[in-house]
Length: 117
Image 1 (tube, rainbow, N blue to C red):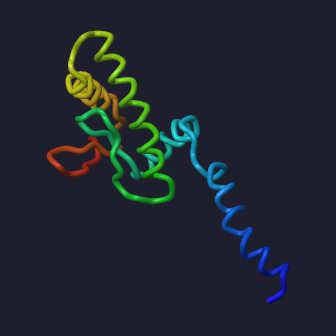
Image 2 (image 1 turned 90 degrees about the horizontal axis):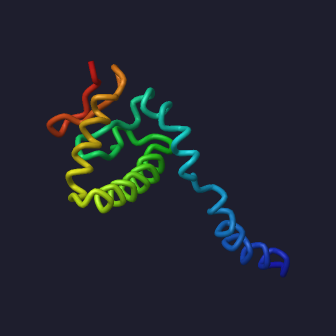
C-alpha cells in the first residue's frame, strides 16, 4: 500500500470525528423542525410534559432529545423559583401541552399514541 493511501486511511476517522459536531442538530433547529415533525406524526406530546417519539424517522429522536433537555432545564428552574416539585411542573406543563396540541397530532394516552380529535 502506498504511503499516501495509508495517510488517507489514518486521516479518515479524524476528519469524520471533526465533522460530527457540524452534523449534529441544534436546539434552534429542533424547535424549527418540531411543527413539521408533529404534522408528519413523528413526535407527540405526553402527559409528563415531554415529547415522545411516535415513529422514529429522520431526526425525530434528535428533536425529542434536544427539546426535552431544554424543557427539563426550564421545569427545574420554574420548580425552584416557585418552591414546588419538578414533577408538579412537569404535570402542569404536560396538561397544557396536550390541551394545546392541534387536532390530528399525536398525544400519548394510557400508553398508546392516538391522534387528538
